[in-house]
Length: 354
Image (cartoon, rainbow, N blue to C red; front, side):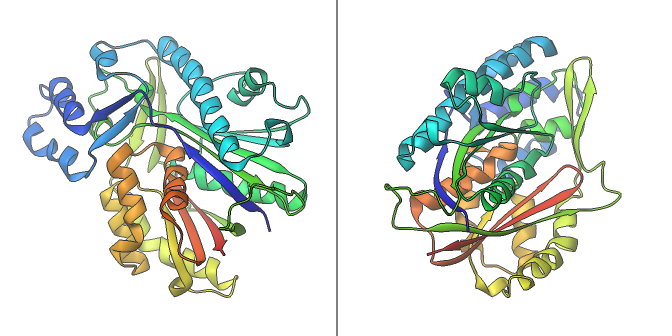
């Protein structure tokens, strides 16, 4: 079975207090929302202390054109992806020339050639590397990326797969979008870059750590007639966020059955899962997971802490949670990665920790 041999995450240059973004939201939305005093409490209820931002809040003092924001997306996507990859390689002791496949995941900007091509040129990676650019999976992307790395490494036991998730959610902000979805997003979403290195069975890593994190299985689920729950509308100004209040309800109504079916095919049940590597969509979503899965809050400490320290960084967030497990330690046994994203979709990955 493929191994996760290293993880890395990036703390951006502008780690910003939630209080500063709260003040920004009052200034931007206050004149349009009569109930701003009630709505602004959502910034406190999010339990976020700092947000990971690639630009200072002052950057949004006026409405920037999409072309300018997307140019910054390309510049920063390359810069921070390379930084995350190098950090992951350093931890693993694996040489960049050994990478056989690169999976690049993002939803918050546009580039052709895709960002992975820019990374390959910048880092002078193998000219024959297999490229897997993945766009549009949103918050589900990080888990889906690990699942895709698992498929690749199973098919090619000699594979060394670099998974990169890069999201610059802040650069999608549209100043003149006075929707409730944009207001909520302003209090929740952040920027992130993370990398995970996955190796096939035949690859010998002399620097392999004592802990073994193996990928056992993965599972995807699309929920019919739920396309409007999360995503983007594309405007002249850029990406307009779609963000439904129904997400916690979808979690409560569906996730437990999907998890049970997935675990059953691996001869496991929910009590066998010792490590919950869960994407923190927000406090209501995390609470819905705990309720649906009947899991004690302590099992979600790494999820809550990641949300508190960085905010919701879309696809990259769960890789920050995974990195926190590597830093703080796993409990021996099984782990479950869980993410939800546009579609509306669920991504699951089963891990075994020895």
